[in-house]
Structures are given as C-alpha cells and as structure tokens.
Amino acid sequence: MWRQLSGVARSGGNVNFCRMRGLSALVQDKALVDGAWVDSSNSKATFEVRNPANGALIGKVPNMTVADAQKAIDAAKQAYESKEWRSLTAKDRSNLLKKWHKLIEEHSQEIAEIMTAESGKPINESKGEVAYGNAFVEWFAEEARRIYGEIVPSAQPNREIIVMKQPIGVAALITPWNFPMAMITRKAGAALAAGCTVVVKPSEDTPLTALAVAKLAVDAGIPKGVINVVTTNKAAPIGDLFCKSPDVRGISFTGSTEVGKLLFRNSADGIKRICLELGGNAPFIVFDSANVEKAVDGAMASKFRNCGQTCVSANRFFVQDGVYNKFVEQLKKRVEALKIGDGQGCDVQIGPLINEMQFKKVSGFVEDARSKKANIILGGKPLSDKGALFYAPTIVTDVPPSAQLYTEEVFGPVVSIIRFRDEEEAVKKANDTRRGLAGYFYSENLQQVFRVAKRLEVGMVGVNEGIISAAEAPFGGVKESGVGREGSKHGIDDYVDIKYICMGNLQYD
Ligand code: ADP
Image 1: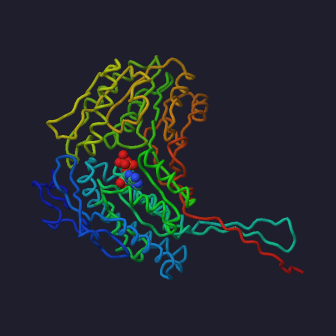
Image 2 (image 1 turned 60 degrees about the horizontal axis):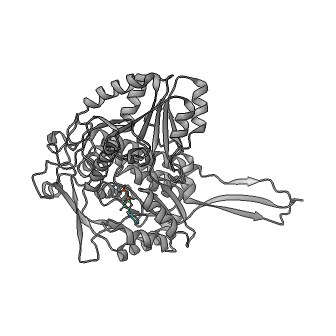
Image 3 (image 1 turned 90 degrees about the vertical axis):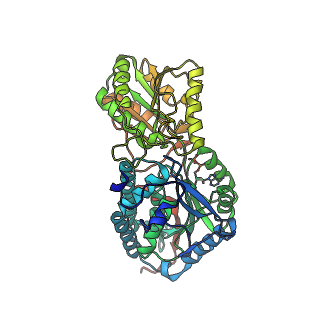
C-alpha cells in the first residue's frame, strides 16, 4: 500500500525514513521562528515523532524551550508592527492567504501522507482533513476583505460615531493531534485575515503536519515572523509564557477541558482574548420518528471518524424503545464490517489510537462499564495482533449513568447505548452533563425537530446529520465546552478589537 503513497515510504525500523529517502520535501526537522528554520537553543535538543500504527520513527523535531518561545513571540510582535505586514491592505492579506490555499491544494497528497504517518488517521480521512483544513484558509481569505466597521447615527449634532475593527496583535495558537492541520488553519486563517501575527504550538504527537503547512505559508510569501511554529514536548511552561506575556494579546486553544481551564485561569491577569474549544460529551438521539437507516449512517460517521477521536464525536447514544432493536441490530452489522489497520491502507476505516494514554483511557472506560453491569455486545478488547495501540470497535448497551462512558468523553471507537421512553427523558438525559459542544438527533417529525433542536444545551446541533463541521459554520461550545466560535464570519471576532472613534465638532453648515 505504501507504494501508492508517493511522499512517505514504508518504515523499516527505527529510521527517519522520510528524510533518508528524501521523499517529501515538506517534512521539516526544524521549527519556524522569524522566517528561519531553527533548532532548539537547548543544545539542539529534539523529540521523536512516531507512527502510532507501528511505533516506527518518522522524524525528530526541535524540543524548543521557553526562551525559544519568547523569541517566537518577539518575532511575531516585530512582524505585527512591521510595514511588511501592517501596511498591507485587506486585499493584500487576502491574496497571500489565497496563495497559501493554492499551495496546500497542490501538496494535499503529501500533507495527507504525513498526517496519516504521525496520527494514524486513515489516509482517506487525512485527505478529507486537508480539504477541510484548507477550506478555512480559503474562507478566511474571502472574509479578510469583509471585516467591516460601522457608522452609527449620533444623537448629538456635529458628531459622527465611527466603529472600526482592528487586529488584536500577536495571538498564540495551541492545537491538538486529532486534527493536525485543520485546527491550525481554522485559527491561523482567521488571525491572519484580521491582520494578527501568530505563534503556533502544535501537539507533540503531530508537529510534522504543522511544520509542513507552515512551510507552504512561507513559500506563499507570507512575511517572516507572521507565522511562527514552536515545537516542544514540554507544553506547560510555554503555555504559561503565552498566558503571562503582555505581548501575546490572545490565546486560541483546542484540546482538553483540563488544560483549557488552566489557560483560562492563567490568562486572567493579562485580560487576554481567549477562545477555547474543549471536550464534548455529544448526545446522539434516535427517536421513534427517525429514519433508522439514516440514523445508522450518521452514527457510523459521527462515531468512527478518526477512530472516535474527535471532540464532536457522538459519545452517548440515546435510542427510543420503538426503534431500539432495529437500530442496535443494524449498527452492529455495520461496526462488524469496519476495516481496521494501518491508516496507510487505502480501504482502512479504523486506525490505531493516538498514544498509550488514550489507549489506557478507552480500555479503562470499557472495563469500568463492564464492572457496572453494562452489556458489551461487540468488541471490548485490544487488538494486539494489529499493533499495541489498536482497540476493537465496541458497542456497549445498558450503560448506567454512573459509568465513565456516560459521564466522560471516551475519545475512542466505543458506542455507548442508552434506551429511553419519551422525548422529555431523552432531552433531560442529553443535557445532563457539564459539557455542551455538539449534539445530534434523528427525527422526521418537524415539530419535534424544532422543539429538541432548541432545547439541547450545545453549541452545534446535527439534525438528521452525523457530520456537521464546515468552514462556513460557527464551531464552538457552551457550558464547559468552551468560549468563542471558529470558522464562519464569527471566527474573526476573537482576533479583532472594536474601536469607537468619536468625530466631534464637525462643521456641517
Ligand atoms: P489531548 O488530551 O487532546 O492531548 P491536551 O489538552 O493535553 O489534549 O493537548 C492539546 C494541546 O495542548 C497540545 O498541543 C498540548 O501540547 C497542549 N498542552 C498540554 N498541556 C498544556 C499546558 N499546560 N499548557 C499549554 N498547552 C498545553
């Protein structure tokens, strides 16, 4: 299968095979600061990036220090204040983003291969992510030209009230491994469109995709210092620096609720703009009125994309009495047919979990449910013959509210099913969580559709749809799932300040 993938060769043990074969020029082994590809200032220290499917070494990247991150902030500040960036018109910035978009499109296969190698994501999904991630670059290239102000009628004569939007300055972007590219472009696209400059801290599990995409930004002519990428496997002190530095005016974070809360707390002193996209606990409700076939399609897409490792993945399936048996039966057949393996395989649908921590969490949650008398009707075990990080697609029914599968986000290929009697019960149970990112439900009853869509305590609702993310739509959560919105026209808001200019004593007559 590797032969079909041009950019990355099959790993033959502990070698940096991308570099050795010289196959993908996009695989970088340096970080990007002030337009230069640099090593860590700590004796050129590096950390390894391994393929979760087989443990093979893919590359090494600089293990940057707090001092290095400070240099990146300084570079971003200097770039923000420089004529090369500040004096660009919105159209100029839009054009640069368009060039970046074009280069990403041209290199989409290579980026997808790097992504699959470091994240384990099936190659078709990686290609999908490159297209999805690039849609944000295109969208924000377009939005760059529509960051409008206002002229508001004044209540006083000889006065004009002018409102304009200005970039906040330097933004720090901290991103996770589950969407190694899209989480960066969704933030950086908006920031650059607004006229900000950025320091990106990608996940330690997936720095190569981040560096590849940054390389294309450099090639697109985005001025030096506008995008900086700091790679590290010691995120906490660098996160702390972002929170404390007066030169960082905003932080955008996608990741765990725990780290999100920490960043929120630590940036309080500096009254920073903060956008947090945190974990969810998405309900997926199948009403008696649903088209069950469509509901099963939606369940498969929502649950098994990226091996269940997305924050909008359905986490708790609530299925009404009347369609319960039919739904479970059909779903079981579909789950049994999933193709599992190394994501490089063209027909693979389920890859490995990203790392050991994630693997332990998923298997621990299933064991917890087992001990609480839930029924494991499919899977429920590691697939050691495939690799150390593979876990069988699993269906658990009769999940009690005390189980971790019910209360927490599993982030793995595990379907938890809970039976319900009526709409009231389903909505109450769906909302019985401190999280509120996405929610899904299937119903062909128009009255029910509006009732339930309004009552679900989430930031995003999929009605008869299992995959809802799009560059044009606002992505974000309520409750402890976060603050701020990404994508859509609202995605710009976190990167601009509103300035009111009062024009007084105007002589009109
Ligand atoms: P996940 O469980 O999805 O890996 P994390 O919240 O641990 O979620 O990681 C998401 C991103 O946050 C990664 O880039 C990671 O390196 C970074 N990160 C982890 N801990 C901290 C921290 N204390 N401060 C700043 N960033 C952090």
